[in-house]
Amino acid sequence: MPNAKAKMTLGVNIDHIAVLREARKINDPDPLMALAICAQSGADQITIHLREDRRHIHDEDARRIIASSSLPVNLECAIDPAIIEIVCGLHPHRATLVPEKRQEVTTEGGLDVVGQFDAISLAINKLKEREIEVSLFIDPTREAIEYCERLGTQWVELHTGSYANVYAMLNSALPHSHHAIEALRLSRSELDDRLEQSYSDVVDAANYARSLGLKVAAGHGLNYQNVSPIVEIDTIEELNIGQSIIARSVFTGLSQAIKDMKTLCQR
Ligand code: PXP
Image (cartoon, rainbow, N blue to C red; front, side, top):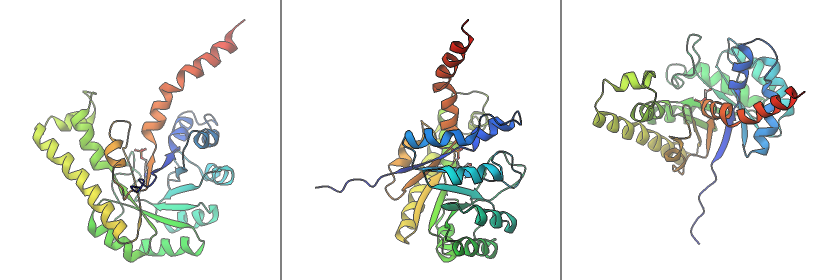
């Protein structure tokens, strides 16, 4: 019998629910409400990012989510010692260390595992002492993976942002998106080459990491259009996806939300 393909697991990043809440600074929508829906709908993991500026998820959200989730919680965080201390106290199933810049809209690149080797090593040791599994969010390069192996992380999460950006440039239906504007400067064949390169970087990094015994996740910018080629990469066992799922849910879930409100509006 041919070997069945290994299962791909899905972590759903629910930060974006808190982004909506923070737009009004009230307690609605509460990201905690997503936990049961995620579990019932086939999600394998809840992913949240406790940013240093607390722009969406707050410490109390993280505490309640970790305490209540039936699924493992993957907590993304910076390597800052004060944050690592908090994460140790929260005790999620896994901590994914990510680079953070206050001005960025979202995580723009992988960790600098070479330049910040010592600081990352310190963070990993603290987390491991508390028996928290560790993942490092990195750009898909062999050099980064070699350093991850030396750092003794169990997981790497490959940043798929470059792949997703080029994919969007080639397929963008939105004429004013920054992808479309950048795409104007490149020919179709340059874009095709870039897409092939960014995809093969992910394939190569995943295979290399797996060959060194690391578990491999991937994420950032994955959506309903671009995810299938990534799912085909056998050595990746987990995807973490947020923006596109929550964005779609605004539309696929909106109909029921309106019907519920309409029912309440009946005299
Ligand atoms: N993985 C990591 C490490 C991230 O920082 C993010 C963004 O918070 C994601 C996955 C999810 O990215 P997206 O929201 O683009 O799906």
